[in-house]
Length: 143
Length: 114
Image 1 (cartoon, each protein chain N blue to C red):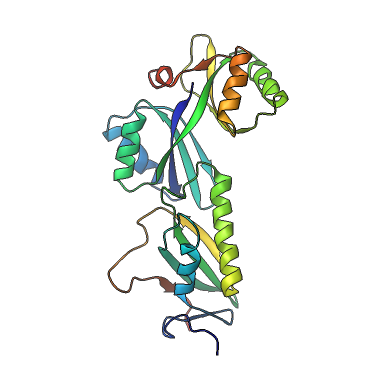
Image 2: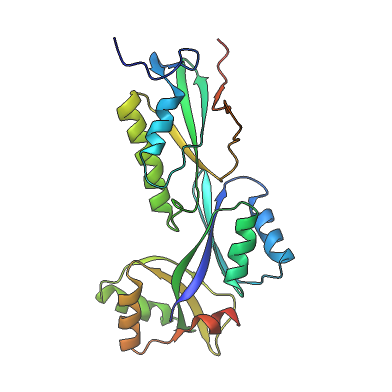
């Protein structure tokens, strides 16, 4: 039910992103989804890749600070209000969303959105109870 | 006499306050997970001295959340203020960007032209 996301610490300077994408490309790692959180001095690059073990290894070997974080991939009906329905339900259950970003690929007729919750297990249980479709990690890496 | 923290030739005077680089090191060593590799950049803007402290983000302290990294930076600034009495601006940097060498590493870049 959980998806492994790779987070990379980057200084806010030219070439930082070029370096990461070059390393991943040369290692045959394919990026499935990504987002970049920025501050004045640094950024956190968050990636869903097809091979997170290899991504962590090759980036780590080049001296970058990398960690893995568990996120949840939710299937969202691709129509106006699709995301709003899920957000309403999460708010009612007092589940807090730390961040989210959309997936590049789709799942049939649905969009996929990556969520980071402050209480991942409680969020998953609540979503499953509401019959919200959550994708497995291995489904997501292979999309 | 005040406790001497280091050699006087290491000492910096920032806004009239005596600062020993080793004091910065002890602040960092006091925070769990932070390695004591730092770089001090001292400069002057107008008439005011400025102190920037570069601290490496290693895997132990790297949080996936921006707010936690920012809180770490603020905590280091607060501890430096409490221990040394100076306002520093902490900049989090990638690991291994701060040079290490045997013996005396370059810990300080003083850009002020005295």
